[in-house]
Image (tube, rainbow, N blue to C red; front, side):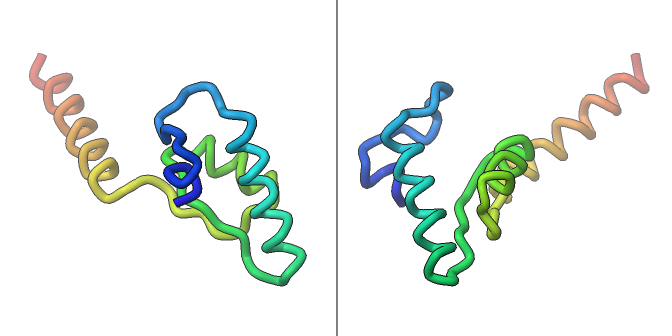
Length: 83
């Protein structure tokens, strides 16, 4: 993982310039070599941004996040209907 190898935190809210440059370099190099550039993101907004930057393979979220979000949504709806 690029973020870990550069000793950066994946949860940083402010994008690190060195990390962003490295990600851009990976995307450009993969594209030039005919390889679909890809990466893992956690939000739809991040996926849209990376697609606009030229990435063609995007893994979005994790199973745990999707299950947690679904359970939270269900609980919110149940609470709203019984209030």
